[in-house]
Image (cartoon, rainbow, N blue to C red; front, side, top):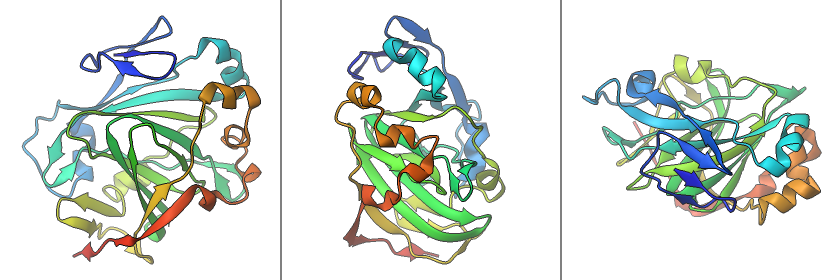
Length: 255
């Protein structure tokens, strides 16, 4: 794949390398055997099928020192169009550790290609107090709030590609998703199905993201508050301003 300086992708069929600003990146690959336990239904997909590709620490040359000094990084994820039973291809899911007492590290995503559903969940082990379902189209952004784990699901009929900006100070926490076999709900062709390994004290709600970065380079130059918040989450008092509930769209949890 080739990613130009305006973050437009070409040669998307070649997922074994990424070229950005004359630098070449090779992916980490997540195989089906690494994630098959996260799905509601079993599948005859070969264990060595690549489900998604992760390109880490993509460098914008003019901001190389900026990212290093502020301990930030950019990643890119490519999700294949694969169905597992009645579910779309999805990422493993993870939480972040605390950046400050009471608040974990937030994260910023942009969909570069395709359509992606984010399942955000606020939980303490198996007890879930909030679930947010957010669909993003190409070129839309989302700010993952502190204290929410998240999973991405490919809703596209082709590959979907996301770019994320995140602190480099921590290692993601995968254990809850691994132990409880995925997110608190499964998004299937039939609707939402609750994961019985969790105890839900909420009804999932559908939101649209109103968070947007008009020009990433300008935002980095100005070091806007949402960039600073990636390591200092209390700089933003209320992350709910980045979301609007879509009240006319409701999910019925299927047993």
